[in-house]
Image (cartoon, rainbow over all chains, first blue to last red; front, side, top):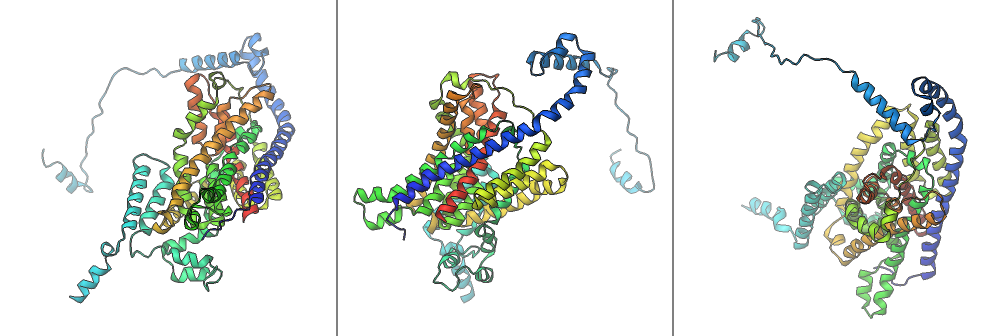
Length: 121
Length: 409
């Protein structure tokens, strides 16, 4: 049997306080994540970007190298250049189709099998 | 001759009740949904098969009466796992893992090992969307509680009210369906209202599979064409150190604030730490594959086994299914509305469609955000942005479960 009476003050408390607690707890986590991002983001990004920026400056024209890293057009130009560059490298293949001849040589280890498989010859 | 008669008398065909036959048909239908329609087959298939096994007369694999005695403080078998081991069948023994809350936590470990929290770390505001999507849980809790008084007000008999109404603990278990998180639903229900485990697990997994059907109409109704076309800035890259510190920090803070959420959050974050630290690849792979698969089989089979005709074929199951869909819809709406509210204050606008992904159901809900967004603008890629609220929803629903357990347990 289920209890019929409902303790409304408790139900409302669970509903409102429960939802507010979820929001508050995740708010705290947002603050911590932002703090974490602030503490860890900057330094490694600068250190890692420096040699890469120098390497790009050697290859690309001045305008592209000095553009902001978030510039979508620059990214697209670099991607296109890499695509064209790597597509250019391709093995030259002879356009002849060949069929390799498979020859079964006799061996005492498979003589019986060889004989059975070649009955139709 | 007597032996032959005894044999025929012992056959399941001679002992089957019509309600058991109905349950067998339901299990066949669920098997069809899992195999042919591919609705969450990894869990729906074992659940449906567990339901089939438990409703076969005379199979003796699961004894619901043993578990009723297990919960009855006046019974000598109260909280006696020894009685279960001695008198129970195969599924009774496996069910101990559900009862003790072991399987959902182990599944969370595997989920953590497969989840990339990078989009969430890159955009911590996603956590708010994940929290808002838990609105469905609490609204449904309120609604489930009000069924009894509502029936009373229209003059229903005491019997009807007793059979149709829900206690506070049961209402909390029904509400958690809105979290769209199977293991969390099972974890909370096994603690608060084990008698409803079968219908709640089936409702949770069925609706998770139906996310692409349930969410898009709500998303379109609550957003304008212009809002759906908002393009979001690319997420920043996240360093490995951040990814390693994240699970440790989340576990420590959440467990210190809300100890009841520690088993779920702790296991989720342990799995994630194993994946991100890169020094325990063997453990990470085991959590993602072997452990996860074994536990999914045990969990699915045993949860399905609780769906006997006595616990399933009643009006409460229908009410649970109805309120489950409402919980899902409210959660979806909560995430979208909060995203719209945030847009009033934010300089860089967010696409409200990613708010709906806050209901967990990883990664299906995020994929739905992407699909609906691309209907307006095919060049708009929302998937990674939606993954933030999506994984935040997993944390949010585990936190909500912890709160309900603290307040109602």
